[in-house]
Image 1 (cartoon, helix red, strand yellow):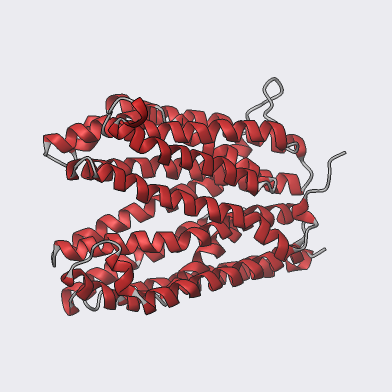
Image 2: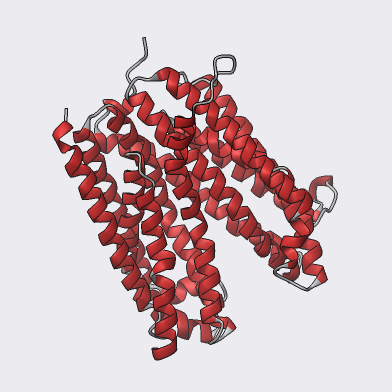
Length: 449
């Protein structure tokens, strides 16, 4: 007899908070790690920082594929558990494991044969190229850690064990942060490895998260087991995983494309404008980490109750998640509106950056509420089995509408006006996501139990 999963019986407000809070905390820690990692690498020299920035676009692709596969497995497993199809859930988890290993091997091949070609596409400085090859090759050759870690965390989330998922992710991040200065600068008797030390610290942290995730799944996750002898490949499961996962992969990649496009447009005005947008993007990402965590925590709740045909619980989850997301975004609006100069000063902003950035942050800040709504609605609909809405909404926000509007506004009205393009893209995206969510809930309301 299988014990009733809490996602089908726990009161929705408590369930959403208990599922989401650990993910929100772990994502904030992960975001902090990225900042700290850059600080240590910058202490080597500026060329090293530039090299890791170039390599990061390749690492973002790793993350995109790993997260997309994990989200697809999460959504399918949670629906199968809700429908009490336990054997199918085990087969899906095992398929997810094979897909993660296979995906990592693609990046291993890239690391062996394509690292130098990739780095040379972005720089002609031999010092930067040398740093970049050294750093990226290590991250690619041992990339299986990030794939296994991401999958095992999503499996824990699929059964409601978000605290365990948080512990695995945080442990990896903490190990990375601790090892960075030790391996880069040779502290505590370790050899001074420079930028290679930063890469080694990164992959050790990823492998640590993966090992802890595998152990926690084996010890705690009684609903899901990897099946080996009885496993049979099911084409339908592969399609179902990537029906949600493929759009998520693309969605994760949109951010890097948007930053590249914005840098090309803003670079016409000044390097300071480009620098400001980089600062803004980091600040915005930090704010949206808890919103993303809220969406990821709500996804398996929606998936489980969709599988169980408990549509009232699905609707209540949507209302709760959207309300919390709006609250988080409102806090961000208040902070950005009241102290934009202070925020920019954290990055040693000069007079020119303050002149560009202070009004820009105040123009953009109110759109955080719209963006939070679009993001969370995308996750909710993904939990119902459709990842396309999340992909299209993000594409509207970051590419399809934003970049053309920024380009036109910059050409006709100058840099002071381009920030209103964010308003246009966010309004269109949130209207699209709202209509899609309303359509899903309306179609399913007749099946409420």
